[in-house]
Image (cartoon, rainbow, N blue to C red):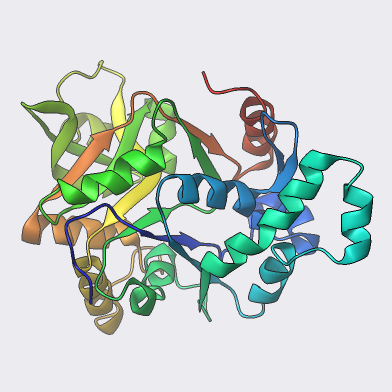
Length: 302
């Protein structure tokens, strides 16, 4: 098993949710296959945009955690078009080139199945065999990321070489009204890199009073907190903690939550967070967010 100190080369994307917030469209089209238009004007499935970003960040293998039966549709999307399709696409050279590149992504894909919807931590645990003792970059399936000159995915993946073996989660500034949707942290900024934070507390979806009392970080305004950005560099030990939680049936609101595992791991071996000050996050999880992110994602990087 490889546990080297280089940049992370594996990524995990949980996709096993039902997509209830995008119902009824999600009955016909899985959320990860819904279309997103990029700055180049091409319409791609959301998962396609994810993979483009990850490959550019140096990721070599990507594990998709899916519901039973979902692999076929994703494999079909990335399959080589037949001759008739290619003839039609030749009228638009950019589309023909895009079509020829699709199978390259299929070669990088691995799949793990989450048979029952038991929570985000449970979904991540299904990728344990894929991780094989390596650090992995975990990406939210209904978020996309972009940044210049370095993408958030690349920046976090490359931190694997400098994190001392600890987990690192990307965070960004959120307001009190956003606390209900994110895990949030308290911590101390490192003197040699103020964007890196030695985390002292992690709470999933805290209420505002608890956040004001327990989740403070230097350099933030009175109404600012640091919440999950949707990207996590996970150490192999996270799977041991998740296994323990599942074995002992440790649940929050009926599910196995990754945030609890992250807090347990923080107590054991420490935990870092990286404040994202240049990267952009695009949330496609709700109809309102989807509409807003569609418009923003089509624009060039700021």
